[in-house]
Structures are given as C-alpha cells and as structure tokens.
Length: 492
Image (cartoon, rainbow, N blue to C red; front, top):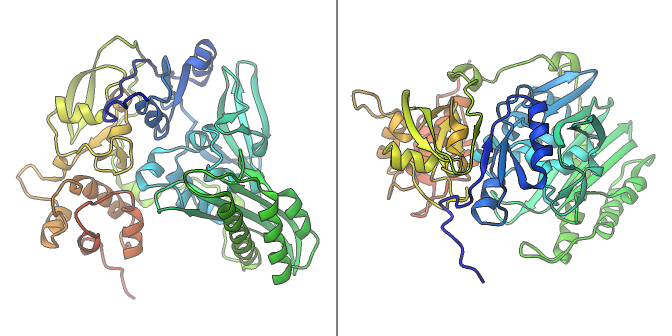
C-alpha cells in the first residue's frame, strides 16, 4: 500500500484554465475530455486531488462565466444555475416559499463553509448516491439542463444519475441549469437526513413531495439517498398513496413499502439493515411533515410572481463587493504567474503555480500565519478566511482562483490603531480562545453569522459553527462569546 502524501499540499500538477464564456468552457471540456475536471466550489474536487484519488491534467474553472450562479423565474419555472451556492439556494425567498424540501436539504449540508463554497452543480455532478440536494430536487420534479457543443438538452433529474459517481454527462458537456416547475396548489414537501455527526454525508436521506385535495392524496413523489447506487425514487410506494385518503395506517404501510423497495448496501457508514430501517422512519416522518405543510394555510405566502423579484439578503446589502472581473485566463502546469490579491484591504503580489493553495500563499508568502493548517481536507475549518464576505476554507481554494476577490484573515479584524474587534474582545472576556489554534477560524465564521443575522439565537450560533472543530474542550464559552456580540432584538 502506497504511503499517503501530505494532504496540506496539492502535489498534482495541472493546467489551470479560466474561460470567460460558456462556449469557451464547453470547447475546453471537449478538447481535454476525461483529462479535465470542472472547478466551481472545489470542496469535493480538491479533496480528491489532495488524496491522490484523481490527477487531472487540466482544471477548468467556471467561476468567471456570467449567469451560471443565477436563481431566477423564467417562463413559470425556477431556474437555478449550476454555480448557485448551497447557501444562496437555502436563503432564496422563492425556494423557502415554494420548495421547502430543497431548503431543508440545503440546511443539512456539511458545514457553513461547504454551504458557501459548494454549488448545486457540483453536488449533482459528482454523481454521489448520498447527494443531499438530489432527493429533494427529484421529488420536486426538477429537470437538468445540459449544454454541449451541439446545444442544450433537458432530462428529468432522476435520469441524470447512472451509477455511483457517474452521470449522463459526456465529454464536452456541462450541467448548466436545474429547472423546477411551479408547484400545484396544495403542495407540501420535506427532506430529512440521518448522518453519523452533523457535518457528515448521509447514512440515509429522504424527500417527499405531496399534493392534497381535502383529505385525499392527489400526487406524491418520494426519493431517497444513500440507499441505492444512485439517488432513487420509490415509485411502487408512491402509487400506494395516490388517490387515497391520507391516514396513519396508510403512511405506516407506505413507509414499510419504501424499506422493501430500496437497495442499500453495507459500507463504512452503515449497514444495509440499518438503512432499510432508517428509510422507513424517514418516509414515515417525511410524509407527515410534507402533508402538514401541504395542508397549512399559505394565505400570507407571496405569489410566485412576487416571490420571483430579485432580493438581497441583509448580508449581501451590507458587505462591500470588490470587482469580480479580474481573470487569470490560463496558467500552464509548469508555469508561475505573478498575481495580485486583495487581503485585509491591501494589495499584495505573489508568484504562484496552478496547484498553490490560498492557505499556503497567505502563510508562507504574505506571512499571515493567523490562518491555521489543520486537517488540510476541509474537515476542521481551522483555515477559514472570508472571501467577499463569505467564510471559505483556504485549504481548498486555489490561489489563482482568488484573484479579484476581497480576502479577510484574522489579522484584518484588528483596527490600524491596534484595537481589537469586539468579537475578539468577547473571546478573551469569555475565555473562548483556549489554546487559540481554532480561534481564527471561529472568529471569521462567527463574524459572517453576525453580519447575516443581527439577532441570532444560540441554536443559530451552534449550527453556524458546527464545522469549526475545537480540540480543547466544549463549545459553551465560544457560544457565549458570540452571543454577547449579537444585538438584542427590538421589543415593541
């Protein structure tokens, strides 16, 4: 067995390409074929490259292509661009109002950093049977729009997956859009997940979309993850519900039918027996939750047209956007390029190769050592910095892809006169820093929460920091420190 290399570094050399248009990206994908990989969020791709599971000759970033991150209503459908982040989808008012199963699924994703970096196209394009977004999207009737040299084609999302890690995408094709139909009146949906820990992929997951007319089930779609070679619908169990009166006995029988219909395996995360039991419970609870949402009063819900208006979250309105049009173009595998980075409000220059990580450049070339090495594969969040106001994992960001972004490290929290940020003061006051190794990442992640929510609850804080691991002790003092900086809600 070969000894694993240091996962802090990216040993593989590759050409880095940053196309400015969709057509250019498609041409490059066709040119390189299976020798290339697409980079969007990078939370899966770079981990596999670090672990030497894959070694592409080219990495093609789609992050400069305009429009791929849009979430917009068009022709009565909601179009979600493949580069839309999980965080953006979760917080979109149209998704929250009309597709709650998708909101549930996005909320269940790994960590805050993975949510802000990861994209729906990446989550689906990996072809993982454990994809969190897939079961929800399948039950909501989503279609995948694929763009290639011959134009665009659409297919039901459930037909997009062909095996573990495999999709229908051919050389020269890119998943560009996920398209959701407007739900019928009386529709409710839900997604549930069981995992070993909060920031983990599913042992089993399930989604339900149900349409009611009075006490009768008009339509139903159910899909499950981590229980078959691909995310799968349980069509036989669905048919048991359609046209029937919703009842406790019927739900119990349908849940048992789901358990029999899936095809789980034993693996490192769970046994096939457990997955069957888990799927039964997920189906039972999911049906009840979706039915409750379907029969709830939506008189205050905005119309589909009103909800489709573009809106900015408070965080998006407050944070300063820097220019987003700087492009690195192309850097060969054996080349070094002088790039300019905006870090803590100052411009810095650094010579980098395509496989240099932002974490290494910050620490070794800019001497900003507050950002820490930890696991190196995005599991501890010690390397968290902010990029354009969002918490990201510097160990999973290529330095060349950070050109034109506003980067904030822990050193940038301190004012020029040496005065500490109020959150830093709170960490000292509440003894939240302990050994201090995880503290920079904690601070940058917590700052993003306080910018997004003026009045977070303790549950909000714990959920937002769930990916920032502290090896010293519990998290009580950390949570207290963050809560002390939250603004008190205005009482009328």
